[in-house]
Amino acid sequence: MFTDFKITEGRPLTVQVKEYLKQWITKGKGRVDQKLPSTRELSTMLNISRNTLVAVYTELEEEGYIYTVRSKGTFVSKVGIASVPSWHVDWQQHLSPVAQAATDLDLMKRDLRGEKGMINFASIAPDEKLFDLANVKRAFLDRMAIEGEILLNYGYAKGYKPLIEYLTGYMETKGVDMDGKDILITNGFTEAYDIILSSLNVKEKHILCENPTHHTAIKISRLQGYDITGIGMEQDGIDIGEMERALTENSFGLAFLTPSYHNPTGIVMSAEKRVEVLRLLAKHHIPLIEDGFNEELRYSGSHMAPLAAFGGDGNSVIYLGSFSKILFPGIRIGWIAADRELIDALVSVKRARNIHTSTLDQAVLYQYFHNGNFEKYLKRAKSEYKHKHELAVECCRKYIPHKRLTGTGGLHLFLELQDGIRSRDVLRDCYEQGVVFTAGDVFYTDGQGEGTLRIGFSRVSDEDLVHGIQVIGKAVQRRLEENGC
Image (cartoon, rainbow, N blue to C red; front, side, top):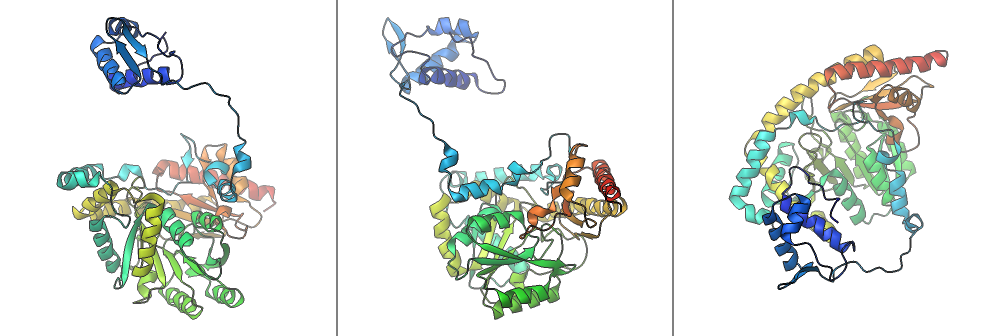
């Protein structure tokens, strides 16, 4: 009896013993009314202090797992799981079309993923080595000292008011007219986009977007029952001529665009095209969802205002923001900036789904901003990422045969290989040599892109970056030679 108990270092011993005995009882290993060893006996059996066992027995009795009979000992209470006939469900047969589609579109399950020790170009998450841990800890302690009791209680569906006020000013510094608009805090981009699509009743469940585009946006759009039409990309953004033809030939309920450091191409839409895009959408009365992806990660050139700023005092643009690719993805903070009446409705949807985004996370992030740490961190991060960006561009041009390379900022580059070269074939070759990247076809709305790939450089050391791109280049060259090129 109790021979399988093992002590885990770093956890309170009382907690470990208590959990062990609870499971021993609830799993039916101890019969109802079975007498337990005395605390003295069990302390010897488990080689732990008797005082620990006294504390554990006291707590278990208070919780009703055991009972004590004076002068007779301690016994198991009637809390075991009764044995009943069991049966098995084929859950695959019970999955909804949404769950089945989500599984089919889940890249984490169906794509080759980087394993420990590999050179991983698939990730575009920020480099955790740059995380400003000391000031995050200070922000946490500062905010907890001010209103810790409040932060650990329920919050508001709309979000933490000081953070909302900060983000309102932040949007205004981007040139966005926030008069008549408001902000809803979300659990990152994914929840923000999902809430919007599930909340809007548009005449046509048909979305116009760039092609390629953010895979998560494709996934959520399809899960929400929307058709997608992707418009090709030029070096300065979406192809305006193709967009105009699509708007003339089809009916759309919404548009989704990422004008700055676009995912996956890294292209920045020119100011002229931003004006023309908004003119076309206004002409056809199509609301726009703008993804402010990586806007802050500009390494050269002048500031480019978001589409929401070009829209002036109009309310047709819904802006989605997130700090996940700049600051700390583990703090799932994003926001929607949109018309006040729309935000009011979205708040109710948010409340119905998950009550609110973590108030503690919001407050720590706000305090981090309030303490003046964001600009310092961003300056340091941009310097490091600019170096990696320049090195990645240099290596791709030197080692990987390609037709086109894009990406003037952000955390990734996008390559179009020579005709006839499939990036998934190259990926398999590279995977065997410990290098992984993202095949570009997952970003296309129409099954194209088999000759494209995305290289994320943010979390790769300089040495690995050079070596990894050399491996990719050699794999591409071998495929070219096999094709007689």
